[in-house]
Image (cartoon, one colour):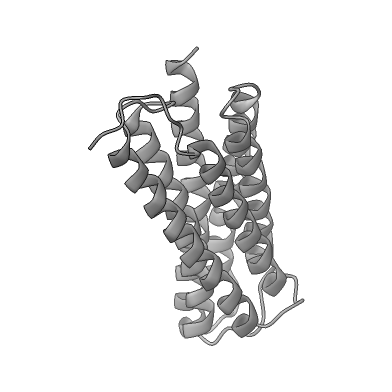
Length: 204
């Protein structure tokens, strides 16, 4: 039976929990690129956080079915949960590629992209955390977009360097795939920002 009374099902808190885990996974990934931890160590930690985000996302989506009135549009709740989950899936995808490709040493471009992911997800935590009161959300979203633009530039330079430097074809294939996945992760941070902006505009 649907509950017709207004309930938030702790949506805002759950979104924040997801964003925090995403940011934590980004920082853990950065430990590899900062040469502070091996791939095997960061892979296990990120997989745990990815599973936790999956559970939170499922709880959020189940909550939509239990309530008739929600604090923001049901479609936006669904979109935000799915888009947040996409980001951590891509972070997990990056570390899985590092593991499968047996990468032991990071590249300068990889370090730059990893740092941008950390910064973008950090702003994402702030933006999601501000959603309940809808104050400051747009400012954080603007910063996320700036990081996305920076990520595009670094990605293009990274791909170019693969074909300029004396690198084996196998390494080119490996790192091209890794860079593409990392750039897509940053793109999805911007997608989250678009969802958040849409929510704020609807309720302004």
